[in-house]
Length: 308
Length: 282
Image 1: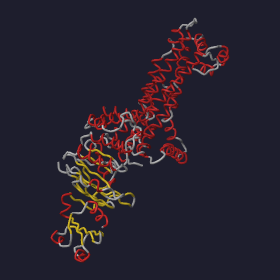
Image 2: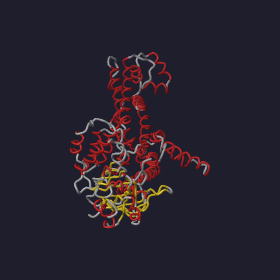
Image 3: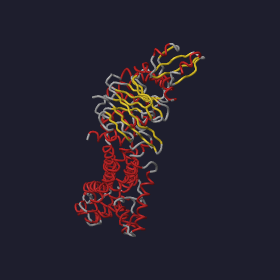
Image 4: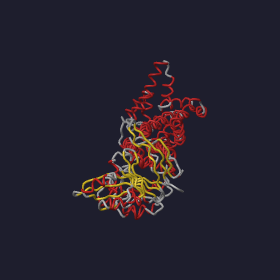
């Protein structure tokens, strides 16, 4: 356990830019933008509630042209709603706020895992790491724990900060108006359950997409050059072969399902109440088994790894 | 325990090329072994096999473990410095200390810090900011703070200047070696380490061509300065090597009794470098 914690710290030292600086700068930038829209009375800005509402309802868009402050505008729109609608709007708005960070996170996770057992073979530092009494299994596990759980936590912290900031700014906007801060803003928003949902989704996705992540780390341990070509090439070839031989995208669609976070999120939404069933489903089982096998292969390959 | 390392009939092939060809030798506790051979002789492959850093055919036991399966256990008691800096460029000196302290049960951090304090290396520096010599100093300081049974050095001073090389070996002998630790050093610069060694291993073309304790070298090998008039007589004793020195021939003999050699000319023990040349030419 002790060893694992220092191995994880090692990963953060090496990848400080993408693990810490990138989310910090992105969060900071978005915070700044939010603050600017609050200070400068902008009417045509992009931000939380306007976007969602406007796509659903044209009249808001017209109204927004007349409003002189995006926050005030959002507040007036919210106040006119029923309690359920209010909650739905504000929570969807909060989730949209996390979009950019979540998008970046996905790419960071993918490229981190793909590089994790590859770059040290290129620069020969594998000989230093392997001269330490750390087993190959421990090395691979430390990279998975870091990439699948800890890095997402950092990004989620950014999301939480943004959401909190949005709430505070909306509250500030209520000052001096008749709108009630508690009833319109804090009441309908469910920040905490939002965050818990994110954590659940994170854990769920890490298992659901284990074949994808296992594949990434196995290729990282195997490839002698350009791992990205392997990562994309092999599944692509298998898809083509399947199409020619069986003419049914069974494997291809399974693969796609277990890779793209969007497909998982859609599914999760449709069966939100049924997360336990989903956890025990055949789909999930197949994902964990295939992912586990790929991770075992990665550990075995790491044991035989030499410089490249 | 008897031997630290036992190597039995180990081979390694890259396609048709035999990097190691049926290699066998032992390393005893408390010995300083020089693994000496020309470039491409198989020195690095031998050492990497011992460390479990590459695959091979044959049998090997390092501190009772097979390196192919027990690398991480072996590494608790074996340290390794490679020919070129293998410390990752992004690593900070303090982080390196933290890391080894975290993963290595036999690391003495205070000792490493004392040694680092004697150098110009700043603890806040990253490896990429250090000169080549400093990186070696850093690696040596880290490794010498680990109490191990076997230290493996693969051309540790390659590319460093003579002052640094001298200091390196001095430090190694004075601060590190304590008769319980074994060291195996590979190099192709024989002269520099000759005085340290207790055992010689010559390797050429993937084969061990000499495996001999230092103190037996002068019993087995003799060098004679033979004047021209005794050449025929000397050649009859089949020298393993001969070269011209100021009109005379310096001949090296293997397992020829001294009595037979004394009347040929001036007799002495060959230097390791001359012996090396003789062995490599055969």
